[in-house]
Length: 345
Ligand code: 26A
Image 1 (spheres, rainbow, N blue to C red):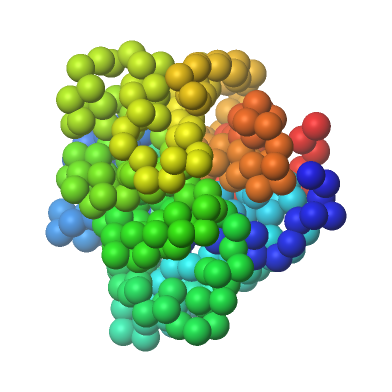
Image 2: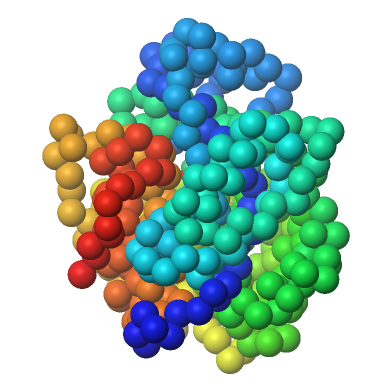
């Protein structure tokens, strides 16, 4: 398929729009807030001073974030045609949501937010230690997303004309009902339904809604710690990532026309792709330490790069290579940001 065949609103994404508050911190600061490197958690009472400390003590910068929105921005960067992707998520009516919207729109995403005028836009503290990142999301308005948004007649048209659907595991904490509605729509129309494991805590603490969505999932992304946690929670009886990927493919599935594909990223180690009982591995070019800035957004960029090719009907091999390329660009910058024209070959 050629770029000319790309049309508006082919890929519909749904997730938590968050403004990242990002700074390099010392490890003690991580410990103080009971956070671990390369993890992602939801904020609770104990994190109420986290953002202000990040801003005042560490001079944090504000960067557009939110996992799915990041992926769509990266996909748009590669697609070079505006509005091929549409994003649903909930924000407040404040300055932060304007920043998020402006950024995503400038990058070409068709942003269709649900607005909540009582709750502020969600934020995510991004604590960088060396090249690792630890995320603590305060969902705020993102958590107020309701199924009404996808049932609104104008938005319904967008849902109906979309060919591919991408939702983060993170969104399970917000509206599992909306996830199932989209999943069932995808199934009824034989269109790919794509999810991401997003973080270990999703497999641990949102097991039931996650496993309700799983039978609809045609393509699943995850990284090594997410896959290991998932396997452990599902009593797979193995820590071997290739076996885990194959077992994920074999979990019960609704749409029998499509066999499930599972893609596991493993940092700088090869990407594992499982499909139809087979494993393929794709090496990652290891960047020198001085080129690496931070890994915030690497997984999102991988998904965005992959999806940019997937929706053009490219082979899974090309999709993975593009995911790897996109992630390698994003880790050379702060947060999920990029500049210039994407030159993936
Ligand atoms: C529900 N949670 C915890 C989250 C997130 C999240 N996006 C959606 N839901 N926690 C962190 N992020 C986003 O992940 C990106 C890096 O992969 C951050 O906003 C960050 O931009």
